[in-house]
Every structure is written in structure tokens, then in C-alpha cells.
Length: 427
Image 1 (tube, rainbow, N blue to C red):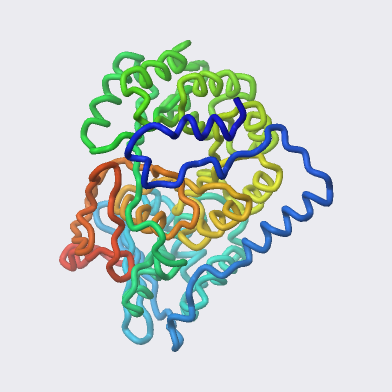
Image 2: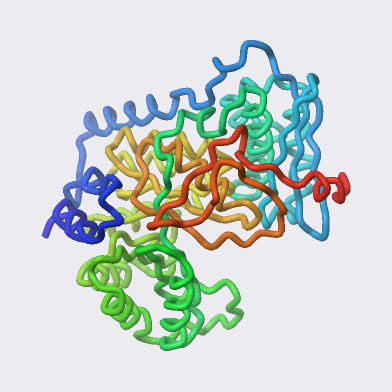
């Protein structure tokens, strides 16, 4: 079975998918090898997509000068607040790692934005990497502080324009966002793991879920422990047999496997008709990712940990993956992540957003997906729990029939309780 046939077959089941584009457009011929001229053409196409403007500065006729950027703290959790010289204000909820990275926010990033015209946000989120040589930090160390700031600026600019953030980065293309329940639990014994999956999924009106395979558990301190032998192989089949063919299933290894084991597990996933295999090998081993992609028919997703456009550029140009997966916090915000999506679109690939952050991460994720030109059918969902008291006048933010309506209110679409904000101290 070729990749196109596999994708079409694996996603054909389930009425919940009927309203979504399927994934055959990310199909390709395995073991793709391009001539130098062909690669040059592909890179040119990617570079053209990367250079496209994202932020719609034409919506703002006058400069919006950033007067202040504040990091606010309460009980070890954080908000970012931006104000313009004209008195406009925007607020974002910090990532769970914002506290750890507060020195970067305060000492490396904030100063660059003070006095800048927020209409130039496209350029600002790139030039900040050169400021104080921030590119040396890499990954979430620079990405999270930058995202916290960008989200607050988008909130402010959206309020000025009276438009949702999605309209500021391209427009609302997907008013409803398809979701899958993301499960963790890989450290548990097989039967307990399976039981907990069923319990977590039963809380939501969905027909799609993702399981973890391999043993890449962040809490492990035993340098010799490799997980329970054979557990993932059994779990893959158990989940499919329990939920049946009208459910869409995905699997994530978080980079656990080497090439040979990734291919072996991938073939089991193919047998049980899983929709994609996420991070089968470590995210930055590009040749290994391509070897796995070439060997399998199941679509390969990668990118939640990526730190640079050129990582995606190589993988896309060389047909090294099928689905790009930026994390809007880790990668530095909506604009940079949208550029990844546009590169993928230029190569006929889809974009899957990785969801992290706690706080209002699930709200921000739905906003971003609502603007994507090339979304996959389902995006990551880890629940609606939050410590932030807020209202969303334009969406109940609940899942009905496997989808959530994205907010359409001005800015980030939510109103955070002013009393809650007032309790914070300015760092």
C-alpha cells in the first residue's frame, strides 16, 4: 500500500471527519531523491513562502508605539502586560516555564520591544533573535518569553482594530477546530495505562485520541530503565480494538526510538490504521527522520521541539516528513509558527499544532488553528483546566461533536478578571 492509499484509508472512517480536509495532500513517493536543480527549485519555493508577510499591518493607519512591557507574578504563575503610548493594553497568560525564564524575559527580550512600532511585529519577532545575540539561547529559552510578549501584543492590537488575533495573522479559515484527546501515562503498567486512557477520553465528546508509545517519561531518573518490554506493541492494538474503526487514532514516541525500532513500531501502527506517527525518532536527527518517513506509509509528524526555520526547511525540501508540528510557545509565537505552516503549505503538507503551556494554552491554540490554511483534521487537546478566571463571550470553549468553536472576540478573545490581574506584583 502506498502512502496516499494508506492515508486515505486510515482517515476514511468516522462521521466526525466528514467536515474536515483529509490528509492525502501530504502524500508523497517514498525514498524521494531530488536532483540539485529540483532541490534548488524546492528551496526557492520554501523561501518564498517564508518571506510572505503574516501580520496584517495594513489594518493600522497610525503607529502603535510600545511604552511598557511588564511581567506580572502571583503564586509562581505569570501574566505579560503590554501598553502603548496611546493607552492601549494587552495581556497574555504566561507559559508554565515563564517563571524559570523570567531573567530572559526581563534582561534579554523586553528591552528590544520598548519604543518599537507594534505594526512591525513581523520583523520584530525575528530581529529580537539578533538583539543581545538571543539566537544563542535557542528553543523554549527564547521562544517562551517571545511568545508571552507576542500574545500580549496581539491582544492589544486586536483590541485596537476590533478584530480577533486570527484575523491579524491571516484571517479566520476554520471557525471550528477539530480536537483529539492527548493522553500521557506511558510510565504506567499496560492495563492501568489502558484503563486511564478510557477514563480520560470518556470525559469529552470526541472520536479521536493520541496515545504515547515508547518510554520517554520525564520523571525517570533510572539511567538503565527502558520501560516495560512489549507494552507499546500491545497497547497499539488494544486501543484500536476497543474504539473500533470509526475512531481516528494517533501515536507519539517523543523521539524515543532509533530508526530500526521506529520503523518496526510504525509498521504496527500501519497495521492498526493509525493516522500519523509523531516524533518517531529524536526531533533534530533529520536524516533519521527521513529514513523513517521513507520506510513507512503512515504519515510522520515532527517539529514540536524545533528551534529554527531551517530545520523545517530541510525536512520539507527533502520530503523528510509529512506534517509540521510547531508549538506556538516553544517556537516564539503565532507569527513564527504561521511561517512554518506556510512553508508546509507550499510543499502540499499539513500543519498540526503542538499544545503546551497550561493557563490559557488551549484557547490560544484554537485561535491559531482557526487561522491555519492547511490544518490536519484534529489538534491537540489536554483539557480546559486553568487557574485563570476569565470569560469568553464568543465561544463556550466546550467540545461538541469533536470540535470547539474558536473565540472571535477582539484580541485573544478572552476577558481576564481585572481583580485577578490586580493581585499580581510587577517584577
